[in-house]
Length: 393
Image (cartoon, rainbow, N blue to C red; front, top):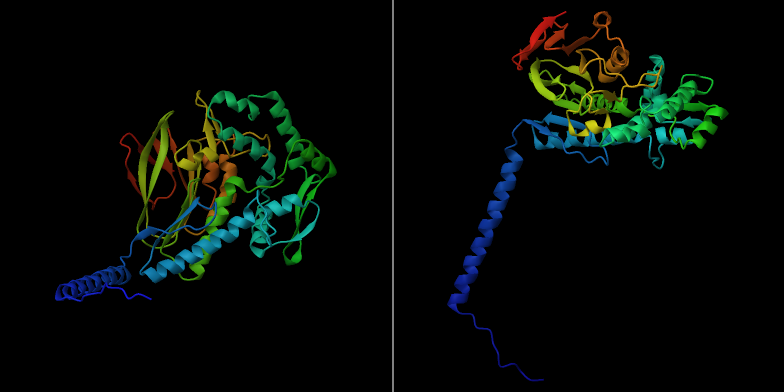
């Protein structure tokens, strides 16, 4: 084997370069460590949007004011775990292994099914309020199709007001939906439920490609927000704000927080009407007939002539209702879901009567023309829109 004639020479020049590079490496490492330490120990308490890792669950947002990075991470875990759990349970379109959710119940009518205690609670709450909204699932599908339209002429395939055949179809559906002999949910002990569907309704469903008998649809986020809030508060985390695009919100703390109230002041003009300042925990529900946020294409549509189509469907006639541009309900004692189930009948109507609202145990405000009507004498309101006047009922 031949020896190589090449050799490595260590000169003073090479040694000096190695020393310099070593020092630079140490400085870079110390600098990087300093940044990490600064991020770790200089956490600034402020309201941040908590990272959402829930698949498809990006509608409910949590902003939280954590005192430390560790607290933020703990809150994030509770938020994501609780969100994922209730999202899966209320999902009407997908079945998850090991989870008997709404989609599973729809796929197994006339079978006694054991469900998670949380889902049982939600179904039981609807029963307590004698609320049959989730049975409108096949009619909701029509309106979801309507809201996905890009032009008025496309509505004819979905709208009972524009298509006599669709109107007849809706009436047939209502004859099943509103008759407990054709559709009902029975609750048993130990979290067992059974979706009763008559042979006639099942046959009609098969003939018309109906896959869902029940669907929480626009009510869903109310239940989701309340469950997340419940889990956060149970763990002692109350410095948060939960909200979603379709009008439900929970302020969990006593921090002074401002709610920016927008509304429709003309057919095509949405303005900031007022800032409402809260300094205690509060829950709110907003019914809205116009598109304000990105996800609103899921819940309403405005025709070129100004007519509204909304997700607020009346069980009596299968038509959407919107007597006001918006109706805002809130309470310092109740949660979103109870508020929703108490108040929805006052908006899903052809004849809005504010006098009926005054008999209830919640507060309200709504815009009538350019007059902001409200019934909470202690509410701190700062009017922003200059033409708007206040009227305390």
